[in-house]
Image 1 (cartoon, rainbow, N blue to C red):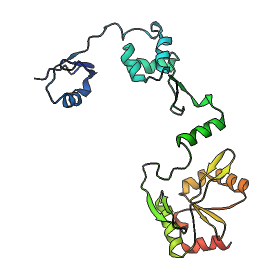
Image 2: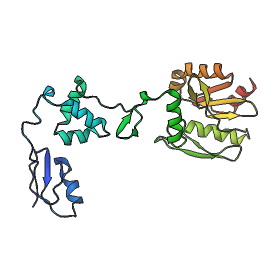
Image 3: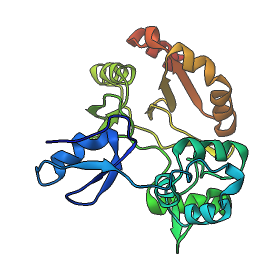
Image 4: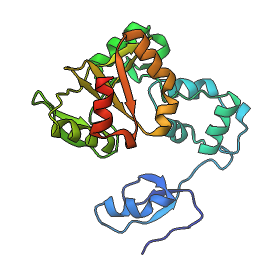
Length: 245
């Protein structure tokens, strides 16, 4: 028989002694050796979670969190509700790590990206293989094609696939180009036609408008011919017109 109070927030298994939230009872019961477990409400100090923010030792909590622990571990260790942790962060009692911080462990401390120079961040990204162009990144559907040099290339959109098929059909040599620098950033064009020394990039109308300044900067700083085309322009007649202009 399974005894449970649907209003309780925390439960404790009488069989294994594990503590867990009430909405995870079915999961725990399934993984607890397949045996029926009896649960009871976790015995907590009823006044603990009712403490005001100013009454808690946030210096100690912050130190525990900065020592490579998660927010959930802080909640369990100091018996704080998630709502109170969130409220403390909004009011400045508690500082949460930003998602953009580089989670590099140095001893027991997590060092944020601000602790590195631009060059150090770049070297760190290369060592850990983070950042930059990654052909298979993202959840979108990928397409594998062979370029004019026989290399297997990953295309990331149907626009790119259609463009590559046209180039292959009409025997226009192409490769996946290296990045072009602009400012302290990198731009990755979709195609490079070496016989014409022309870069092509396929985009939808929204991205063409959004990236207009970026494209202009890439062309100006690299002195290259970079042509951005939309879905309706991906045809052999328009491509040849661009190559001959």
